[in-house]
Length: 324
Image (cartoon, rainbow, N blue to C red):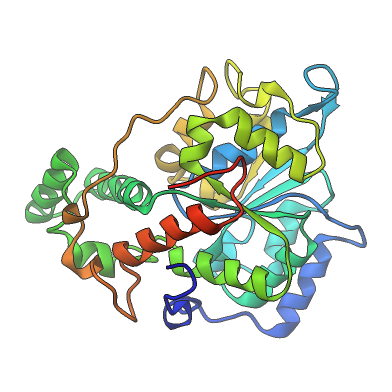
């Protein structure tokens, strides 16, 4: 159940935390202004890129007025996590944050609690936590990683294993790869749950945005989120021909616009015809490797994640309602 898994055992272990002085210098992002913009805290493959982009279509009054948000800042601290970049580097490409900026970040990429706390306390309330059934989100990321590895060239024996997993949607024989080479192996669930707990502990209002609910009933979910953010809902967020209107205002670092772009983001930003209901089924637990099954202290397993997900749907504050 949510909150019972010991997230402290696995969270915040991937990178050394920043020195306190570096964290304090994040105030340079504000440059004396009050940000108070929407924040989407996510995990990989939870639809957060599309969710944040859709708010760039919002107009006031709906359909005819000016855009409500000027930019969507995609994972601004990711270069600090993956490349060891400095706060100055982040400030250099983001510039001055304003209330017209939507920020989305993967929980594990915040690198340490203090960076996360800096964003959480300055964001517009409620903070949106994007989630998805882990039986869909985890394999979605694995498929991309395996295809990237195949495109880059791997030994024949590995290539055959990867192709078999992609053809059959059975990853049970790839535990050695998916546990030790995928960073983080639990798709960021532990860090995401940790930030959710942090919001509860520090009284930061938050709401859950379920990918399945967004796909099945986008009007209700997005209208509910707009209401929580004191915004007028615009049907253009759901019914659009393409995202051309928004793309120039999606701000990504060199890390995201480089080789990863075509694998992770191109299909989302080239979407056409509005939000469509997902027809993808969930993988049976038997398709997951034994190394990620059961309940283990040092490894967040698919069973742990699925129990947390179901509990959150049942008990959590979910945009647009929700349920198992």
